[in-house]
Image (cartoon, rainbow, N blue to C red):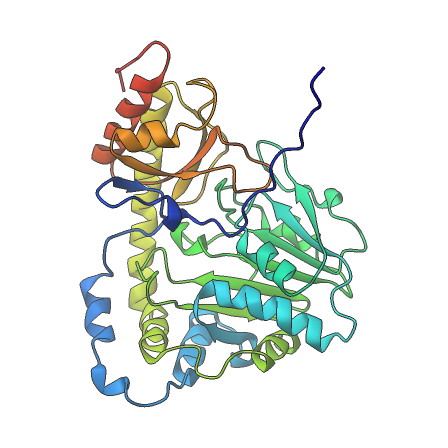
Length: 357
């Protein structure tokens, strides 16, 4: 018998932009459009603001109004990714001995775990099985930091807030990554509220507002924890255009615009799932996000990413997410026309070569 080999450790630094190939149809990156909406572009085109050092105070106030919380609960960041680095550094510095037992619920966005590991924080994984629904009993009782996404990237599963609340307890920090919750109509199951003792929530403006290159996000949470993160934040890390974007995207008009986009995402996702199913592709979970996770093992062994690339499509590989394999692909939700084209390409890769999608 040949010796068994351990599965390769997932590359936690791999993100969807690395799967994007110029000239191919983009299903790899979860940014909604190729540019921000025009009303937002006009807000950002204020070069007179760029000569002065940035001041995020107006952004903090706007975010607080948007969520109905006190400003002490809010920290603007250079994208949610910065928030994860601040979490890893700030909690360790402020708590003396640092986090003793960090637990990250997977499969999910890998940057929080990567940030913790870079900061020297030991990380334990709780890997959920399909259909990837959260079971709080799987999280160790003595975990003093728990990280979970909602809706989770890449599965799209939206966990009930009452289930997440079961993870809250004294001497523990719960961080919930809500980067995609503004793409869910009505933003249900959010953990943002007036009393957030022991809880941190990260939000991103990257996806719905098409601002990946601007780096705009924020933290809402326990004021004492937010202060710990702020203490290790690099001065002026939030640029003036990013701060302006946060003010604009927090207005009632922008929230209403995002709600309309979220409703369109629902319609596009339903049609996309129908097309994928007709092509013989299995969607792995009940997604509430602007993406779906599929299992291509019925099509063939190994990853179908390269074959799809040859047919003109960029897709997000699954094997860099703990708990998933190369037969998993994450697909951004696109309009029905391009979703049909992708489904037809997947059908041609199937053993029967179906083209009825």
